[in-house]
Length: 267
Image (cartoon, rainbow, N blue to C red; front, side):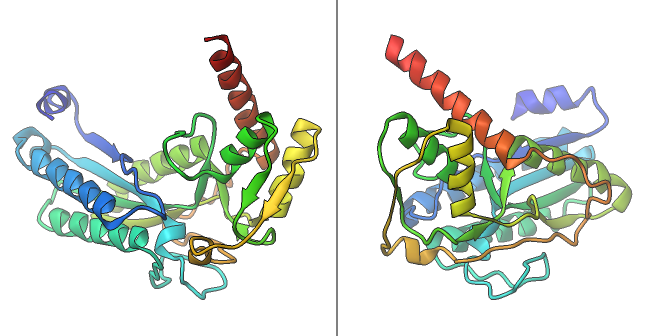
C-alpha cells in the first residue's frame, strides 16, 4: 500500500477497485469470513497512509446483486429494493458492505461505491471457482460432455459482459466528484432478461452443434431465484451505451475456451 500511496503523491486523486473476493453461492462460512478478514486488513492499510487520507479518493467494492437480492419478490429490482439474501454468500456481502460504510463514515475525502453486479461473464473465467454458467457450457461442448444444469431452463437472469461492467463502473466513478456523494450503492447490469434456454440456443448458433443438456434439481439449485430482473435508478446511464450482445459475448467466450484447450493439448 505504501507503493500505491507514493504513486498517488504525484496525482490529484486516486481510485482503488476491490474485486478480489473468491466467494461463490456455495462457499462455506469459513471461506467467506476469511474474505472479510482480508478486506478489513485492506481498510486498515488505507488508514495508515496520510497521502491517501489527504487526497480525494474513490474505493469501489464489487459484489453480486444476484446473491444480495436472491429472495426478493420485486418484479424489477432496483437500489431501493430490500436486500434478501438466501445463503451465507449474500449475507456476508452485506456484512462487508456494512464494514465499508462504517469505515467511510469519517472519511471526508473518500467516496465508496458499493457495486452490485448482475450475472457477469466473459473470457478467462477462473477454473478454480465453481460458477460461470456460460463458461461451463462452453467447456462441456468442447469436451463433448453433457451440460448439467440444476435449475429450470426458463430461469431468467441478467447477463452482463465483464468489460461492459467495468466501463459502467468507471462511468459512475467519473460522476462522483461532481455529485459530492460519499457512499453510493449502485446496481450494474445489462437490464435485459434472458432465459437459460435462450443461452443454449445461442450456443447452438455459435458452435453449430446441439448441446446435450441434462436438467435436475438439487439443494444448491433451490437457493437460486427463478427470475431476476434489474433496473438501476442510481446514476442511470442516459446515453444508452452500446453493450456487447450475448451472441458476440458467447462467441468470444467459446473462442477463448477453444484456444485455451488447444494450448493445453500441445503441452
